[in-house]
Length: 80
Image: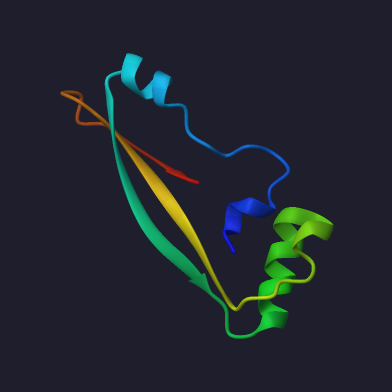
């Protein structure tokens, strides 16, 4: 299960915005690993309310999108 799949809102990045803003994208795949299902449920319920109340996995994958400004040296990191 993906961590952000529990969100009521889209957390997808906008490729058009990145391109027109001169940003390159680097995606880093990572996970949340909880000690037990109870710990996962407490955190996920805090973030996502009822949708996160009953997790079925102790490990949840998610990707982090790093938007890197070409020539500006700036880095913006967005979880997705």
